[in-house]
Image (cartoon, rainbow, N blue to C red; front, side):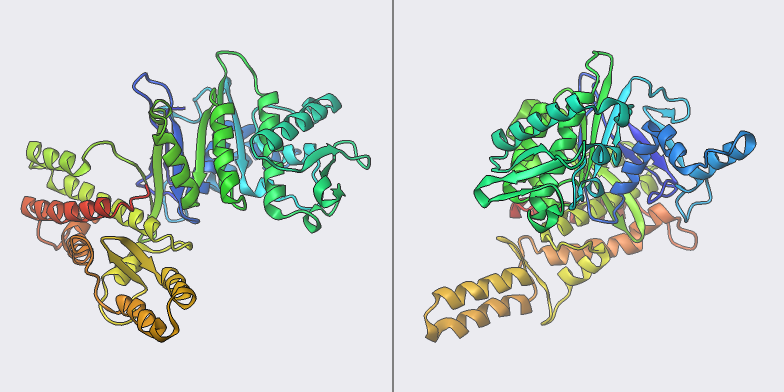
Length: 475
């Protein structure tokens, strides 16, 4: 799958969203995609599910007794339910430049795992676990046999030991045919029921995930003409840092014949994957980094650009001075991308509106929650950590002085590298006054000029350079 385009589909409105790309050899790229909760990752996941698992979705959502016109109307209603609520046009999906209705999926085997599929904490039944996921074209009741179960337990145990250095072992339960038992001999634990009472959430999450991935490798066809895609949506929610690293290594090594699409809201996991990929240039060229963000209640997708994006915009302006409005829209979008990246750097956890972020970073006064300088970004969590360290290490007679100095840093306007605060303020003014009309029409407003575009690019370059100098760019 080289390209997926959505319009009027769930989170994405008329402007739409484009995912995917191809390598210099014309092969589909793997995708590493970051987006906060609510940004629109699940919308992409649902679109892929609808394209490649439409028959199952319709079977699950349409009453079996419906026939003829009634059944066709029900099928149409399934698609209508995906429509963006603000759009007047129907939801549309294009894949590899073809409407999804004519796109041939017969050679595709698409395996999809979402975080909610991995939350079983009471009992782990291999058939029930796999049925909760959308796994290729397989009939789990028919394909998962006793022999299959034995093989999967052996594979999962090997991976737990060799990749993850875990002490737990999986065995068949004697109480149900496809239920497994989790054994930790060092802790004296051996249970097949109420697992959440005896094992921590992260360990059970990992077990469920490895059972699923091991099953996929066993189920998947081996023919050269079979296109295999692994789609993972927020699948590392409760895993600890070490296991996230091991999991990356496992996926990269064992699923190298698959196109892999990873959607995550976890910045540390995104950065971990990004770092490992950059350490391996051969693999790095096969991966596309994309981001999803929300701005003013609209959802957008971007790909991390190679080369100098602002230079590309400047060259476009020189070559096509008559396209000022379109180029202004490019500048606005790139500013919003930088803001989204900046929000990631803050690692604030919850989804932040970029307008709120702008306000917090640029405001002056005594109640600032961020401090930005050439060393990076500090927030209130950083401050608490600094105070804790001061109370631990500083002499008693100097503690208050040091604590006051740490607090005062947040009271002062940021003397940041290249005056980041001032650049953000300047760019936000251009965005509101000049660039806004580039994307929303400009009836009653003066025309956008080439001079305003150049001024915006000048300020935007300062902002971009600041982020690079601080070495905090995360996407």
